[in-house]
Amino acid sequence: MTLGSEVPLYEVRNASKHYGSVVALDDVSMKIHAGEVVGLVGDNGAGKSTLVKILSGAHQPTSGQVFLDGIERHWKSPQDALEAGVETLYQESGLAPHLSVSSNVFLGREEYVKGPLGKFGFLAQKKMDRIAHENLEKVGIAVPQSNRSISQLSGGQRQAVAIGRAVSWAKHVIILDEPTNHLGARQAKEVLQIIKNAKAQGLGVIFISHTLPHVLEITDRIVCLRLGKVVADAPTSTFDAEKLLGTITGLIDSK
Amino acid sequence: MNKVASRVKSAFGNQQVLLLTVLVVMVAFFTSRNSVFFSNAVFGNILSDWSPIVLIAIGETFVIISGGIDLSVGSTVGVSGVVGAITMEGMTNHHQGQNLTLVVGLLVTLGVGLLVGIINALMITKAKVVPFIATLVTMGAGAGLSIVFTGGDPIGGGPAKAISLSVPDFGPLSRPGLVVVIIIAALGIVLHKARFGRYTFAIGSNSFAARAAGINVNRHLAKVYILSSLLASCAGYYFYLRLGSGAPTSGQGGELQAIAAVVIGGAALSGGVGNFFGTALGALILTTVTSGLIIINVAANWDQVAVALLIAAAVLLQQYRNRVRK
Ligand SMILES: Nc1ncnc2c1ncn2[C@@H]1O[C@H](COP(=O)(O)OP(=O)(O)O)[C@@H](O)[C@H]1O
Ligand SMILES: [Mg+2]
Image 1 (cartoon, each protein chain N blue to C red):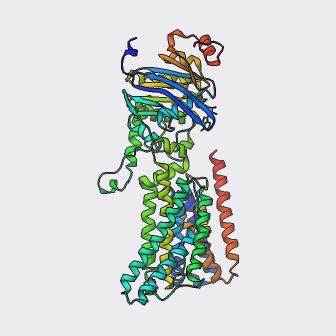
Image 2: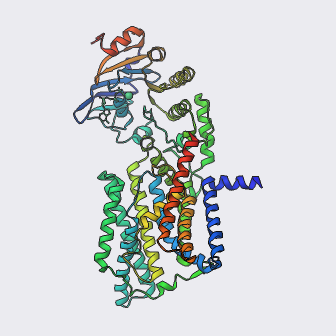
Image 3: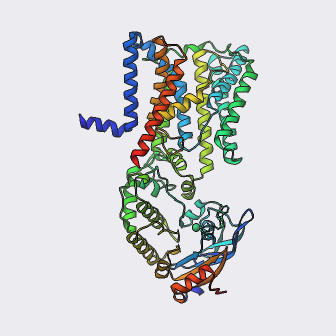
């Protein structure tokens, strides 16, 4: 692989995050290239979700830097990262249950009616319903009706909508925090297929999961966190299930 | 027939059809007990009572949908009306024209509302005080200040024209009443058809998701609380026009009536749920009960009991619905 020599698509250098006295992340660095799927693994509390929030602009690191396409960026809010083409699926629900599927897909990116009313923020709901449906379909999701509210969907359908939204908007990087959690085998397989499609389109994907067979199947490289530190960063081909589990739990120390 | 019914249902939602039914039943009941009830004069009175309540209730609808609460609206009605009245009394004493006085009085009244809204917004979004406490603070301060400013008495002595504006010109509606209808209709459209309303629902439904989607949650909440206080000051001015004076007590208990109207209208205090027609009808039901009970000669204190029962019924209905949905 020659990926290592190119400018990484997305990079975090020496990031630390303290919550009061808790050190959630300690001097973490990682890179991701276009068309690459990086698996981020680690035990509960290892700091995966914290790293995700730094990469997505939801939290600011206590120290450290973030680079997109080699240029240093300072995300002040998720909006900054979204506008730069970095989409995130959070582990906590990122959907508003009382809003419809399409309102969620377009949340923060609404389409407005033409003319002066649009200037006042009048929503082009029909148009959003239609495009949301098309986009979800394109991503490969069995789409529920666009105007149904999220609270009427099953857990799997909700997750599918959340993933579909992230993938359909992503321009550069997509971060998925435990996207296959609570999903049945068939739905999980659909999610993996969506990730493969995103990779084929040249997106950089960060995939977080506790389901190690999925990580081994889908990723090109694996970064392992333990107690807020990176303890492994190597091509997926160098891992097997046993070694990966050992690295996560600390029974195998690769550093 | 069924088609029409289902159209009505989809246009208004089940809750509103129910509220409309309750309202019709009430009107029929009160009319059957005393036929005077069914008259332009009584309807005009009900609408005059309804106008200030629906103003603050619509503001409260935005606040409650966003997942918050605004307890300060009642006392903001009082303090804004009082400060406006003092301004207009002073201008009249200095022989300023009536129209100019009314316009300056309006701007001052709204200015007080704006100020209260900004204080609420700063406490909630910057100091991170929970809305219940933040607005409890401004509720107390506003009520206290309006007594301090007036010594407890209504402030009259403003333009004589004020009260003559409040005669019913449009059927049972007065000119200020018509303005109220226009304001709340516009806000109903904003709530359900525009970005501002969409973000209000999104934040109340899941504020983490709203922020993650790039919405500036704090800035939006600040606007919602400012809107609520501004509408309360509109109600303060409405009372001034109706009474020809600014009374420190004019909005007393208004926050409870507003919250009652919103809850009866189908909103959930946990946020993310609520609608314009529900609130407007909820407020109309409240004022109809009050007027009706007076007209059929039921002792005034039963009014509060009736309102309590309506709230209880609305909450039970909501819980029943939630259970059915799950
Ligand atoms: N908002 C927060 N406040 C305080 N501590 C937190 C917060 N978020 C996470 N932590 C702590 O940081 C550590 C890492 O958590 P997290 O990033 O969620 O881990 P993971 O996603 O790998 O399970 C844990 O010890 C967790 O308790
Ligand atoms: Mg996590």
